[in-house]
Image 1 (cartoon, protein in one colour):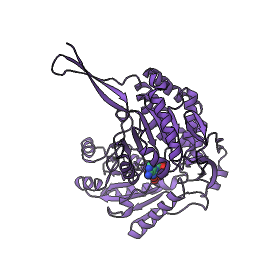
Image 2: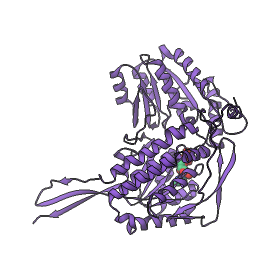
Image 3: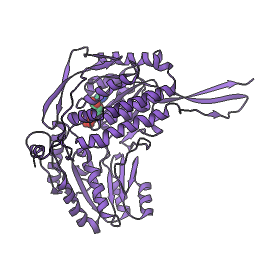
Image 4: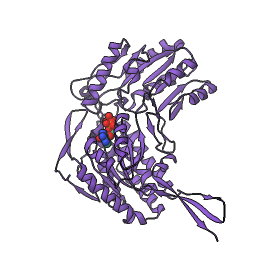
Length: 496
Ligand code: ADP
């Protein structure tokens, strides 16, 4: 099935929205980069250029950081009541809802994700996140502390200052919401560098933030490349904190770059998450959850359930059902509402995924479905399942970030726990079983920031998310994320 065939088959193919913003947003103004340079952003379904976007660099980051500093220290943001900050976040959520179709379309255009997913997942989750943190803005309270002597001691939570935020391309707008919402609720100002592959929805969202009444300079957006714009943001002395989502190797560079200014750092990084299927599970639910847990978003999820451990006694049956489901996925034009899998985000990812499929074959894993490119235009790859994968094969150790699943049979509980933990990562894990005790024992034994039981990829703005080991530092979402954007201050007053 080719993308073109699918396009003809559907009558309700959505048209791509108009691109309204391609410049940098600094201090409330849309400006060209100081160098005058631009870079192209491409539609991964057609490989055609969508637009040229202003390419920020160190000089632009400097202007943006200074604007954010000023807005933080002396601008209207510093004087605004916390409750009013919450009101503005709610207003932005309302505007996102009003423009849901346009924003979902931009996301699909720039990233390639199916429009059905942009509409049903990315946008609603982003909007919910804004509303959740809007509620937190006026609830960041301290404590009174009973210390020795005749003193009154209390703590208060203050904004950390200027937050530098660097995000990836897999959930462009959702990452914006995860980063902006807690930062704004806490009273920080922002310089954001979106991913070079997907800057468009972030720029349009920033325009809506201005429309919502968030004052100029509070949110600055500087698209550009990592080693230039990103690195300049990490090193800038006016930036107090870096929140980064991306690869662990990039995080290592950021950590070294941040040492000079001792920036606060939070990282949400990659994974190689174990998805454990016990023989006593609800088999159909487990198969459906396993398919979703890996293939959702073209496999481009940091928490993708890419190592599927299946208990030996149900292994054959499970794989048979899994193949049937993988084959049913509708790969094609992401603007067709019936499409369930779009293209990979760009040529680099596409090539990397195909090279891992090659490595899986070379290592002797059994490719039971998929394994090839679809069509000759756009970065489409068949949903691919490898069976009989062993722990040391590259497809079992490395994050592939594509629609490639590894099935690894196991014998018993202790064995699967040891093997599940045999990874440098610790972002997420899942277990499928009807035995409550077993589920809790897995939840206790697996070293991962999130454990799903009889479900996968259940996200909520209120539930903290982040990694053990090399999957990250700190937590996003929930009350936990507010710690990333606040400093604790202790005040002690003599009562004499
Ligand atoms: P991915 O492989 O998903 O693109 P990256 O970690 O390379 O993951 O990219 C995530 C984000 O980090 C992007 O916005 C990218 O531009 C940025 N980035 C890449 N290298 C650096 C760097 N040296 N310093 C700061 N940011 C960087």
